Length: 109
Image (tube, rainbow, N blue to C red; front, side, top):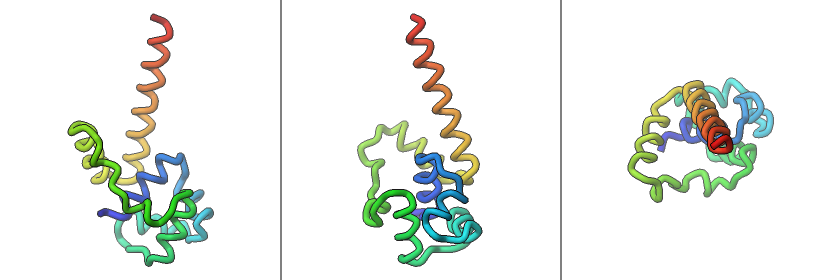
């Protein structure tokens, strides 16, 4: 598991900036950034604080939620895991904008 990518994914899903999560977790923003980029690995205590900042239990961090996804969705997840954190955030915003547009168009029909 790519811990940095997982943190980035969970942080983006919660709509948190790196700085906001760092403050919630009591971790230096620069340290969190290095973890997300994969240049540093967190100790279990730091990872636990990050999980608390994300509002989740440490054990839940390691749960693979992709096993029940369709082949296409697993493909998207694998592609996202290879992206930089900024790219994941942009893709998430793009997908959200498509969903909002689609819902607006459905209401007009």
